[in-house]
Length: 556
Image (cartoon, rainbow, N blue to C red):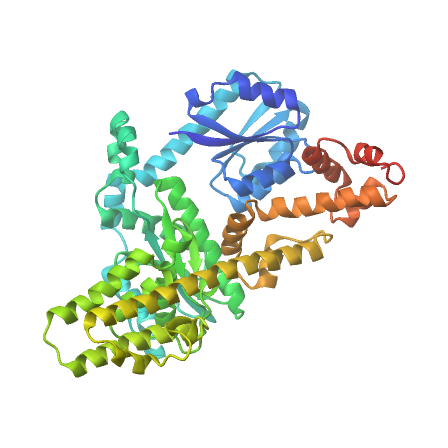
């Protein structure tokens, strides 16, 4: 097992020496990043969360203990090793509240650091083995939640209960259901790609005991549930249970603000996703429904969570998808009674051209092979057209865009001579609608990014600008925004904000006589030294050298 490691050390010779002198991979580690200070380390960790952070204490901009505090809050499972001198050791010991895993006293040899790393690795191996071991999971499963409690929780998302029913039954099963806002989410394991791991499995016979290679789908599901349940025990207002081959998360929260309730749930789902990947080497996709003010409406939230998972083919696996991010919810949501109608609607909204063609073909196969009356066929086609029209209306698409100018769909159906022609017509209009929806979705992505860029350009001078502040302005979740922004811009929000600030800095250095510290303050940098550090790192020269080369203002 290879563990990812981030090395944070402000002395370049020490940092480079450690990277070159230690045979990291031989000991089971991969140095996936290095940083000169805590602030730079945070930017690196936004891209990839390491298993271990090895950090010096005394560094500019953000010291090692401040970095450790951030790691403990945002990545509690990450191990932390502090590098400290003898004169700092007493100071470092005071950080015991941060749950530092190990200390290494300076000066130290490469062998001493390796010994400490191997000690930490032993603990990590034991933690991982405990979570992955199939036999332990089977034993834990036999002692899991009572069946009646599971059935009751399942009933909340499968049928509408009266307040008296869920209060009485919840109390009898010891489940607190008192809250102001309610929400349902579905956590579904992604398909396991075993083909690419055959070589790995052959090289390591012990891997056969890993969940990664298990053929037992329900055992994989229970492993995911086990991780979710453990995390929920530490968070008030959340309950996880298994329902219909999925892990379901029920949110019963005290927050009256629906946005705050949704944010808490989305953050918890993201934490579950990361921990499943970290400990089980599996990926999951979570679909989250809307927030409601009555527990009885969790039924609707669960249906919306299932709809959110339909967007996996578009947005990809291994992520959290909130229905409010991907669809404009309406007071009267679409309801389909026919399974064929549901399949058609799903194909139009999120399917591929091949899937849509196959869906339409199957819809007409039954008609062509059965002896039904003309009237029955007409009623069937009217139902199909009604489904298509309702989808178009849901996405605000004019019918002329789908059926053509001057068309009357329910009259036009009589112009076709046989089922073959009707099928081709239905496929054409459905394809046209699918393409229009896809184009609108891409346009929505583009508009979202443009709105975010406009907000950044308007507020980049503010010291407290953050991704959370931008998302509150745009009324979307941070996870969804980060994914779309990075996909469209080919860089993270933090990197783009820094880019905007650095370009503004160059302009101010050329056109004003402001000092470097004044420019830093104007651009929202709390620390002028960190501004200079970022400028030098991006452009290779200091602000003063840049100004001298462009003949601008006074000395920086």
